[in-house]
Length: 340
Length: 79
Image (tube, rainbow over all chains, first blue to last red; front, side, top):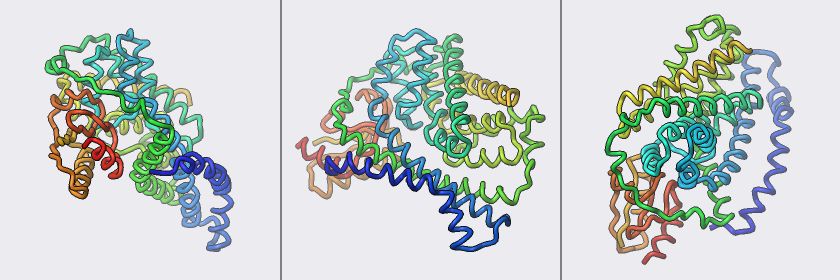
């Protein structure tokens, strides 16, 4: 157990150091490249190296800080509390709440089944449950951080906003279709026991420690994908011709959006790996809408999760789920290609 | 003491099982450790996030992997 004082003061002491490093990355990178290593400016290799040495620590810094904060915030939002908040909610209001809570409630696709059962069992409507199940994986905090770091806050906000809209509307549509008949019958027969909320008793120090755990777990897992993604980005930066992707994923190619969504479903990558790839696609001529649709399909619609959900949902419902969410993603893609 | 690990077979659940067995062995705790993978059984405990640690039919930890230290504390408290 960490000392109580340390748990609170240590992160506060690190914060100024964090900002100092974060705001001096560019000059430090330039110094390393131009002075310490002394390689010629402007060559492909130099610029690729400069890109990597700058981007990688930047993204890692952002990830560490924000995952830590999110890790603490998440201790306040347990699935049990979310379920309680959604019980007996009317549709639409319920869909909006479920999608929003889906962002902050901790979720892992391996818990999809118990979560689904717990929600449906306590009277949360099917469509509302789906809003949650769509938003939780699709609006991913790592993706938000990476988009913010590599494209700025506007693209990050677009991603969150459109992701929410898709989750709300898709859940609402599924609710309207009255598809309860396609839920495996045993779901409604399962009896769910009561369990106490141990999370209520968490002390603040414990929450901070859980924040550390989140950093260790998530950053420890995704750093390699971030590094690989940025490495590919750095390589493409100097070597792949601009407009390389324009013909395939540019605005003029109308078929590219449905194609991107289709390709994205079986591709199962975590957000950390896909965002740097998306940034390369955009840099090389892919349009924002198409790239966004591709990314959402990769993180939001994953084959492994569908296979897990097959235990509780009959095939037609899973296909409807993919169809409705996929259509939502395509609309977002076309919308952004039209606006920008 | 009866210890149960609830989990549908995800990597996290396996980690929790391994850690728990280690703690039980290292501290010479007199307990049986069983893994519950059946979703019907898991739902009886009312957990919505796996993995979960159940000691004598009471859910003590759920939805995360605790440190070995925490498992030891929980188990020694339950004796």
